[in-house]
Length: 215
Image (cartoon, rainbow, N blue to C red; front, side, top):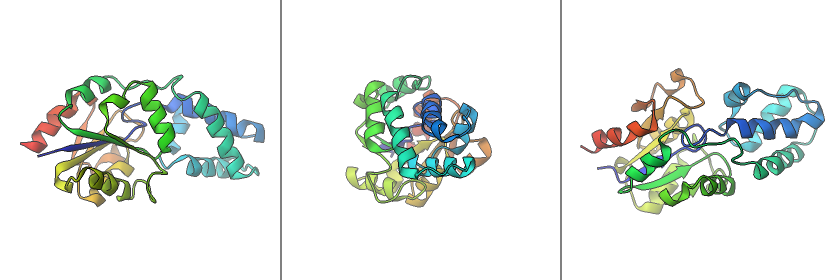
């Protein structure tokens, strides 16, 4: 019987690709960095802000200090978190429908930013816990944040499932011993989601999958 559902944030509950792209271009522009397209951003996000900036510095041959560029990114992004970052279709309705389950978010975005986005999109009321990249000592694909959430709720691995659009979500879930559900509408290509236990192309299909796992 499933008691806990863990969600990824970016690419799963919300599409933040435009706002992240705008913040990237704001941060690297003064150093001669080539502006990224949304498609390019989607291909490199997922491992947290610091890792993202490190990739961009290497890609562009930027000589600026990494922490300075990170601060510039955060300055812009913090002021424009949900300018162009809607929840995906069916997300709010599905979270409402899953009211009988404990629900958490694990994001490789920092906890405060994740929480603020969820607050501003009116999704926090449906969630019991938000874990960010700085909440635990390790981030996805490590199982550490998943194990942290299981411990917080006193839930066994067989009573939990993780829902995400990335191989990082699947790998973290598998390593923690919980079921995995991949959403195919997010940022990662299908071949990177092949190890998921279940796949859905719309969030409103999740309750039926949870029902199958629990039966």
